[in-house]
Length: 244
Image (cartoon, rainbow, N blue to C red; front, side, top):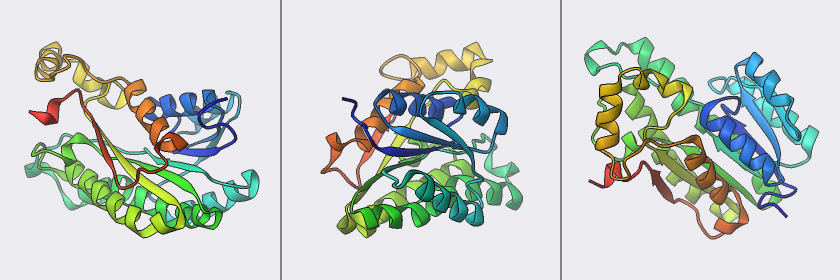
């Protein structure tokens, strides 16, 4: 029997990259998985998988979250796992960041996880159980990247702690993962420079970049009953980079 047998799991940004890896792993462990994404073409591909349902969701929209939560509850009867994974990235230096850049980043990386917890955690609380996994970044742990991306991921870190204390007494667990540089379409541009890639690998104690499976396996642990007494925790998955 799989670790998520009979559970209903939502993965935002679930149609590609790290999210797709989570969707596939959760499905293989027995879950019915909703791959929530804004990319309709990728959602169509996701829906072709067994026990995977692609549903369009703009995580920056409160109205979208409200209707999405209601639809999932009505269609599947329960919501056991939420992974707030959808996000955007930027390496703009602080000198080039304008208010519009800040607002766009925060609307997806900051408000998205907040709205997800706001509308999904109460459903879990009614059930008396549930697991929420928020995807932050190693940049929220160390002094790297004075920009809007690091700020948005710092917000995820703070919200995860606060949500864990808010919903814990209702049986809802909230934990956060902090990936380092993971080989995904979002970070593909880094791989175009072999010199940059080599520097990143050499600066990492485990001497490699991360893979989507590294994040998916940690998310599976936190989503499953194997972590039933863990909430408010932070797991850094960066090959030891931030430990230096």
